[in-house]
Length: 123
Image (cartoon, rainbow, N blue to C red; front, side):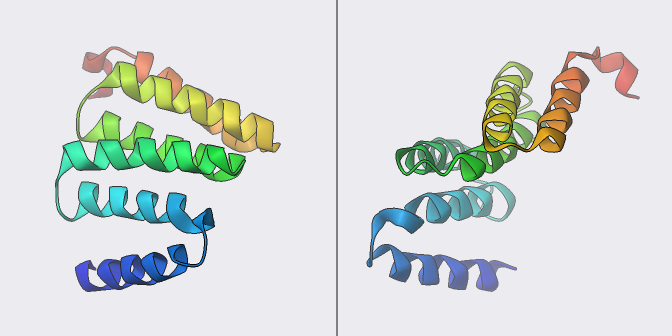
């Protein structure tokens, strides 16, 4: 997957030369690569936040929602930071609701609820 991911990054970098509208997608892709492939978690965290900010600058609410969800998953799975994960899931819910996706907002409620369950009940 690494070579395919790097090729996708190269293509997004080319698109970014023509305007700023792809920068948030590039940052999201780089965050996912740093999370899943490179295991550079501090860089991934920064890139998720950058992607959310850039998407917001262009009012891409649906993409803010998606990246908030991905950041929530990242903080839950890799950093075991449930408070921060919950915050990202709450933001994702807000953006999905704003975008009009009630079902995805309900899914975020489930993610938030799951974080509130005591860890001994997970097993």
